[in-house]
Image (cartoon, rainbow, N blue to C red; front, top):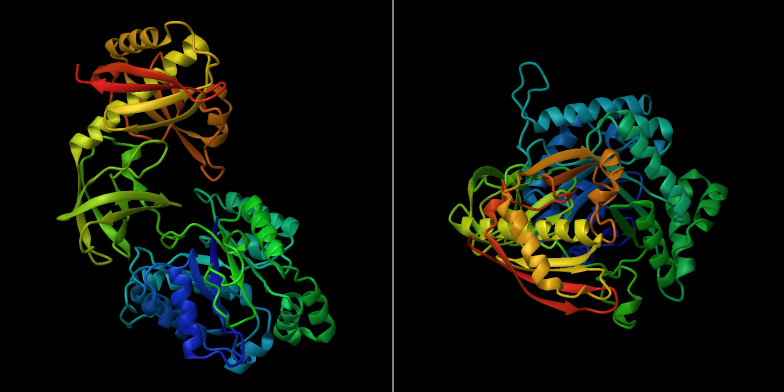
Amino acid sequence: MNVGVALPTMLAGVGRDDLLAWMRAVDDGPFSVLACGERIAYPNQEMMAVLAGAATVTERVAIEATVSVTPMHPAVHVAKQAATIDVLSGGRFVLGVGVGGRDEDYRALGAGYGRRHARLDEQVATIRRVWAGEPVVDGVPPVGPAPVRPGGPPVLAGVMGPRAIARAARWADGLAGFDLGPDPAGVARTFEAFRAAWGDAARPGAPFLQTSFWFALGDDGPDRLREYAHRYLAVFGDEVASAMARACRASSTRAVRDALSACEDAGADEVVLVAPTSTTCTGRPTSSPAAERPCARPRGPARNVGFVTEPLYLRDAYLAVFEARVVAVAGGRVALDRTAFYPTGGGQPHDTGTIGDVRVVDVRKEGDDVWHRLDGDPPAPGATVTGTLDWDRRHALMRTHSALHVLCGVIWNEWGKAVTGGNMEPLVARMDFEFDPLPEGFGPRVEALVNAEIAADRPIEVSFLPRGTALEDADLIRTKVNLVPETVREIRVVDIVGLDRQADGGTHVRSTGEIGRVEVVRTESKGKANKRLRIRVHDA
């Protein structure tokens, strides 16, 4: 789960220096997104202007509107603002949309308050048409600029209630929720309702699930939190504002940490923290130890909701040259709309090669996106590029990975032992099994059995199954613990015909005969019920 931070724009008196400090601290910290909300009849800065500024002074984090009360504005204007911020940020903008709950904001802008939900549905369709470069008014040219990402920024729905969720699930890329407490059960119910509505709408994949909550730390944290909440909610009347303020409970380090854990357990992809202070939250407090940081999360590039890198390597491991479009650039790393570069994962290291004429030195998958680190200047967002793999390295890793599957199949079939760990580099690897102790003469016997299966030249086939169907076959998960994330709806199956069939996301050769010869270099004990085999792959 990622953690983001909202800018303190809802506090009266927050100025340029405060906002610049927040923007830079969040971008330098462990956070995934920098967010800002919208109100009109309130002393806050205008949301889109603030986010445009954030886009120009940050390099890494996503920039998110949480949320634009879109029915207050012309849809074409919102589309143009969002596309502009997407360009300024290099493809990092996320547009949250909703109908709001304060008629005074609508009245301040002279906007109608009726049919808000229906108007929002219509507006999102118009926004997407603008982003696609289509004319939306007869006789008027298309409205630009073109967003960095094909189809435009991701759109999250700031909705509550079953009817609003059902409508939004038809057009949103995910949910931008909010919970006062936060109440773990309430967050879980909202997420489940959005997942169900997503399924009812026959949407592919899984929705992006985000929530947010107010928090305050320090000795006066509870008081500051309630005062902030009451002031913000005063539009609903004193009695209601007081009751809602009392529901806000994230006013200590432990409470914030517990709330983040509860949101993660509920299935949150991301949580946005909203603080009632203009003091920067960098994830590096000055007085408390690092273990007490409620915001601490591993630092990474901004998560992405809307563009999804097509993983060409999953369907064609032999594709060594491909064309793609750059959809995002962040700090020497690029994301493409499609890639044949395998990202580090599942014990298999990343591919290397070139994008254009610049070396690819690292590849990582984060969410649905594959990021390529370059040893040189990255291409511009929107550019069409040619990717070329270092084929010798890729093929060596394919041979090694397939050799490990042969090893796994032999040990499963002969001894019924599950894998407890593994890793590989080109033509060398290790795999751990739950033996205690190893059988006598184990190494030479395994080597002979593995090479016999290689000599049989068994076909290696790849297929894709719905998650539910795949998990009905207990033998598909060969690791000691099921490592397939809950969000994966389609499971890739690698079948060494007649020997081994298991869920796997790596690259493989077409038949065992292509592996070569396997040498069991040595066996090691890594503790009770955990024994390691080290292998080397040789040319035949």
